[in-house]
Picture (cartoon, rainbow, N blue to C red):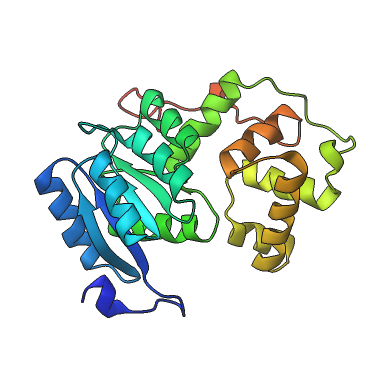
Length: 246
């Protein structure tokens, strides 16, 4: 059963997805996989960033699954242009690379999700659903790498009781702390015993007060203003092969 035949999932229409990858075999394989997944409708494919821009303008997909290293226009530049010209289309990076030099430029360009190509079909569907609901579509290892990078590089204030900055209410400060802890909107709602709609209202309000644009910026803000505890990266146990388990 294809994504289109699967129709609505959980009362929502299928997400319309464009696949971008310069390797024909890989691109066709991803399209074939997505066609088997519920809640996904593949509306097209492209072989590089330039073609992706044209296809987004033509098809107006909900989400673009974007490779990074491609000829003519790479995934970072294509993401930047898509987000500038078509703000209704979200971008999830789907790449072989998980290094800092690939991850952070892509997120800065406006990607809302980042997966490596060893992701399962369920992880891809979850990432698509997350970015469409306003959450970040990051795999656990990517989120861990992001938090560790922030812990190493961001100037931070020590956490502790004090007046929240920028006129944030105590509840809005709690929400941004939970965002920094990596929780989705649904998980924040369960933690605070409120509805997801209420969480989204808090997020919209705190973004308006602080000038933040996305959850990655919210994580940086929370650390910088002492609203969240930094991950203790120096206490990470090495994996059996001697490499930290990211």
